Length: 382
Ligand SMILES: O=C(O)[C@H](O)[C@@H](O)[C@@H](O)[C@H](O)CO
Ligand SMILES: [Mg+2]
Image 1 (cartoon, rainbow, N blue to C red):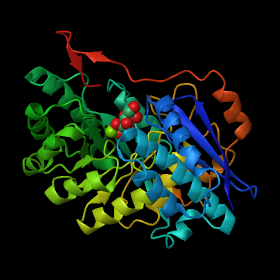
Image 2 (image 1 turned 135 degrees about the horizontal axis):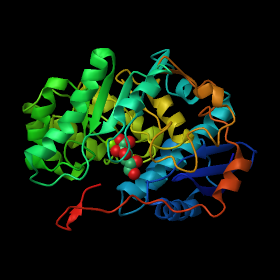
Image 3 (image 1 turned 60 degrees about the horizontal axis):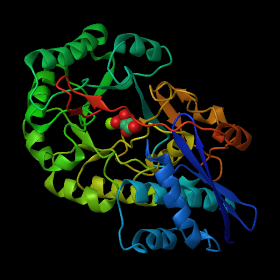
Image 4 (image 1 turned 120 degrees about the vertical axis):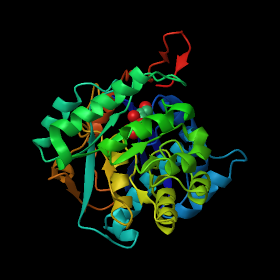
């Protein structure tokens, strides 16, 4: 079998889908994208296409190594997202060719269902209580929200009280019937991270995510020493080689690689195994589309330490399209009591409505995150 064609579709809300076709008619879907840089990743996929055309899609490991090591400059968000989406599509092709779901090719399921969580509250965490109430009606009991709005490097007791007050209201309203992670989203700098973590302790969040920016990873062990709240990070780390330092230094209890940013299924299965060796949990990051989610689920179903899966249904970014709008087999993504069953169709198990995708890709608006500024006019982390 030989790869004959790669087609990319940038579609609302902010996703990019990749279709890889072969000379035997089998095709696979991937989702190579960095939110806000879809066109840049698209160019990176195009550059890799020259190498890929004519290759045997079954040789996933060799193609991965060639795409990663073939370039003198490697790694980082753009290249690893391009490799990620291509890798996902290659696994889709292999599963379809052999007539089995990808998790069977990775040794089979370690669980019967996977625990999911949902975002509430939006960029500026508001209406969190009503958002939780609505999702509780469909059996979701685990949530994530942003912890703050703009947050200065050295911020006030008032800003801390505002952030903590929102969390206190949640515990007040729901007690311990629900669990929630708080995403600092990299908005909190090292001087304030310990202050905020300490203030949140009494409300026992399930985890705090990106307590500081990934480029400040050396703070993770020190922050972990200062709190009992499990710390999570990983959406802005792109390969085993970045995660290994985090495992070695400690401090992160839950790693969150993104299967569309960190080299795909091939790389994330390896990161998951490394995490297990350090007794670190896995909660794959996935605020993206259905192919990214399907790829995550295949990693979840073969990883003992997979504890939670993010999915983007109703997420504040999904303007212009919802998680399953481009999917034909919507029923396979149904959640029951906050869990999802394995996707058992051959390959990734997601049947893409290509007509819908082609239609949506016409004049697709570019998405980029807002540029926030502090009151003094300086740039604020979004
Ligand atoms: O945890 C999450 O889902 C992420 O922090 C998410 O909010 C960002 O990755 C966003 O997608 C960037 O554009
Ligand atoms: Mg996050």
